[in-house]
Length: 196
Image (tube, rainbow, N blue to C red):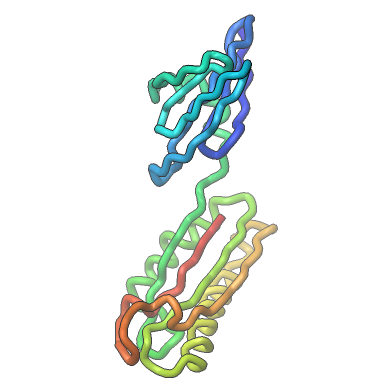
């Protein structure tokens, strides 16, 4: 018996099993637990699959539940070939500064750099943020400075990073902060780093 595997959508998988090549579509949850959906149409019959591990055989017109352990076994090759899910990290900064807090320096050294390093190629987006103290123009610049400071730290260790790495920086200033004007909030002085 030969099995052929292919991934048809981020949250759905198909396998062909046996000599009759019975096709099965299964909805898989994302790494964060989110479940999307897929419409299976064949032979004039339509089935909507929108629950984790919901399955259908095209043409049957019926949904059923697949067992996670069977999916893991039947889709082992496909599941192992999936890319690493994007990493999302927040690093916090001292007030009115592009210097990270001590905890965030440790986070950068232990988690962010390791996340980038484990990828064959990486695309990194660094977005700076501020609290609502200071004026808009100043905060825009400060948020960009924070993003650029993180970019520099990554580039300082470029020899240890993937050769095809790209880094994009942006500053959002206080635009995403919901606090009242002139509110000092250390939780809003951060850089978000998305690694994919």
